[in-house]
Length: 153
Image 1 (cartoon, rainbow, N blue to C red):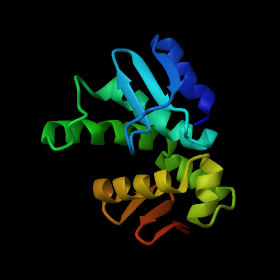
Image 2: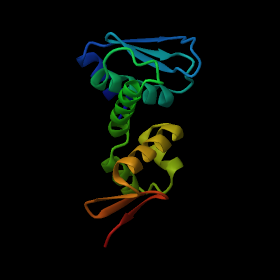
Image 3: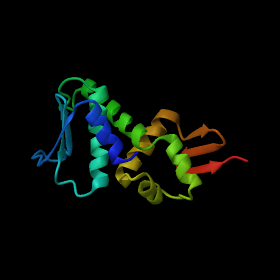
């Protein structure tokens, strides 16, 4: 998914997007009251895209203040928002299409999907928790550990 599609989500839902310094360590984005704040210190557009997707995920999946990550309910909401972002930016069909295009490793896949390697690694872990070590789709098998795609004959 391209950044333009994420920006279209924001426009359609009338969400305000603000890029500013976030003074809280390790906090790169925040969603609150129909506003998404992205830390302007994020160096790359790809990095911003991954954070933006997660914050849009909060719009669709979260309620209230979930900053306290020692609260189990807040952790669940955080995980739902991240899952939304993973599935929007790195769908299983996207992985198959990348394989068909000649992508053969995680570095190439991150580049093909226009996501950070860290985001890709987290998405693969998410899918592994959701489906186990592999998933069959059409005539393909996606292995989440070790990561790879095989076409069945």
